[in-house]
Amino acid sequence: MIEINLSSFPELVTDRLVLRQLRMEDAQEIYLLRSDESVNVLIDRVTATSIADAYSFINKIISAQNNNESIMWVIALKDDPKLIGTICYWNIVKEKDEAEVGYELLPPYHGKGIMQEALLKVIEYGFDILKLKRIVADPKEINLKSVKLLEKCGFVKVGITDYGYLIYELAR
Figure (cartoon, rainbow, N blue to C red):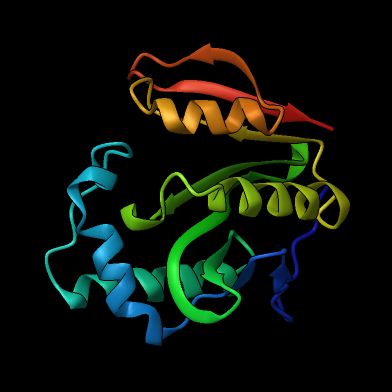
C-alpha cells in the first residue's frame, strides 16, 4: 500500500522546468488559470470569478497536502518561478496503489512540449517514489490534446464514462 508523506515537499526538476510547491504568492496565476474558459471547458469546473476564489483553492490544496490526500506541483520554467500550470496526483486509492493524474497549463504555453516534460517527471515520481502500480487519467472526450499527450506518455484507453470522459491508465 502506498504511503504519502509530504512533510518535505518533493521539488522535481527537468531540463526546462521546476515542479515546486504551490504558494499563496501564486494566487494571481491560479486565478488566470481557473478563470480561463478555454481551460475550464475541458475540465468541467466552475470558473473563478475573483482572486478570493484563487486563495480559497490554494488553501484547499494546502489542506489536502497537509493531510497527505493529494500532491500538486506548480509548473514553472527554470528561469522564471512564475506559475504557468499545475500537475497533481489526486483521487488516491492507497489500498490499490493507484492515483489519478490531473494537469492544466495556461494557454500561451500550450503546444511547446511543457506538459509532456512535466507529466513524464511526475509519472517517474509516482512509480519510483510513491510506488504506484497504476496511474489513471480521465480526460474529456473532446480534449484531443490531452488524449494525444497521454498516449505519447504510454497511457492506454481502458474505457469511457457515462459523462463523456475517457478512462486512461498506465500500469507499472
